[in-house]
Picture 1 (cartoon, one colour):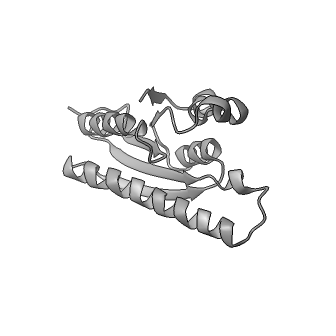
Picture 2 (cartoon, one colour):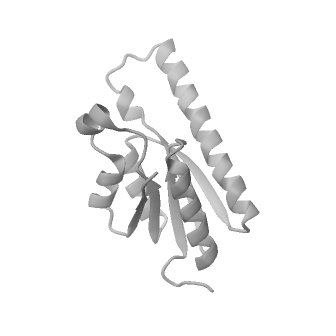
Length: 146
């Protein structure tokens, strides 16, 4: 079975445990649709905009890049085991904005993401990445609760 609706599916990950369920949904949809998967992780540099660039910032930035690379690689490995074509990208900036721009630049048909990372007061103050993507995306968004 192959679908003309979903030729390119994007999985946005933050590497968190709750996001793993969204990854499973994305991989299965790609397998059933015979779609290509695009995996993105966004290093949230906007969160560090007010912090002076010093060695502490550089260490945190390197840790986030490493975390992103590892999260992406795990999904790429899982997709390849399922026989799915996959591309990955490590992006920088504000997560919702970068994800939406990536979908537009790459003609993505569907975004799959979990209720990413933030909760409680952080979510109230910063807003939910999933909510912002859902509100601003021009294409369908599948939000999978962890």
